[in-house]
Length: 235
Ligand SMILES: [Zn+2]
Image 1 (spheres, helix red, strand yellow):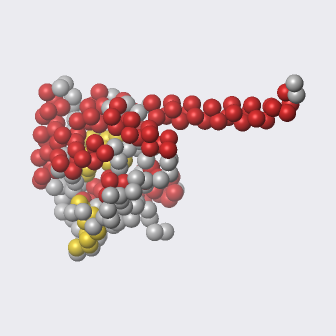
Image 2 (spheres, protein in one colour):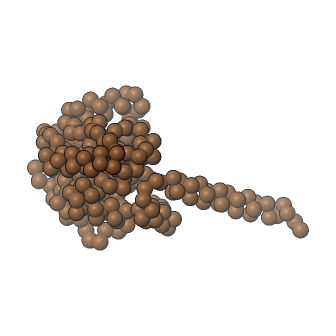
Image 3 (cartoon, protein in one colour):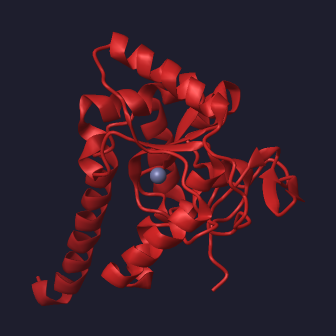
């Protein structure tokens, strides 16, 4: 009878429904394969901000200032590389990338490197250019501070296009579905900025070797979640 009494409740219900719809739409926008999608969606539904607890504590070793987690060289916002760490592109990663490019070409897909190894000094120039352009807070969402770039490891490549629409191109879809078979992962997946520290980068792949890359891919987790580590600047 008294509709006014129920109006706030109805409005609240409507708002909740609208929010849920938005979340669902965002989730279904992922063009990744359904297996990965299923994992990501269920995670987001239950505990959006929390990460999967690691099976066991990560084994973190620092050798000559370089951090290895369970034997994997890590550069992210928490773990920096020394300024004189200048290995160049990894031969193993480059060979794997070449093998992937050949396999892609057989499927009519053209993959090519836009950016590979970057030294500490290169990153210093790039990062500071972005800071003066967009401000520090915004630059930190898409560009690493010097020492924190995965490109300095020699194991990371940017392929084809540095635009988010790359994810929906045949090349971007092929890369997301197949790169683990050649030892790579999409390092900064969609909706994981709060974990990886970076915006979605469908073009940025990190070499881990076939076994680990496949394991990470099948887990549906980011590398941080998979290893049980953070990616956050101290300041
Ligand atoms: Zn990159």
